[in-house]
Length: 103
Image (cartoon, rainbow, N blue to C red; front, top):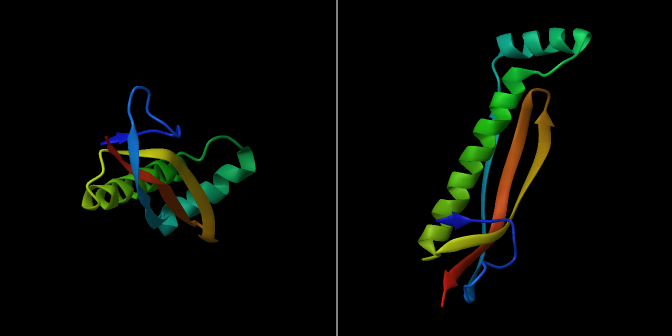
């Protein structure tokens, strides 16, 4: 499944199948939250949260692709990600785009 953030795919005519999306809410365990809190005192990257967000984006993307496959899509174009904090230490990640079929 080709996934791109452009509106078109060079050299392809596309039939629009519709909006597809995938989402997840992820959090880290209490121990990692405590360590992240300490990290804010000295500054720098909070690797536990970086890993959490990467895992969440991958899962949201996989779910979006699965939805596109159910529609019989060849690709998803104009892909975007959005993130929102649900509570301290937890975030929702949504991946969305337009499922298309090659003509």
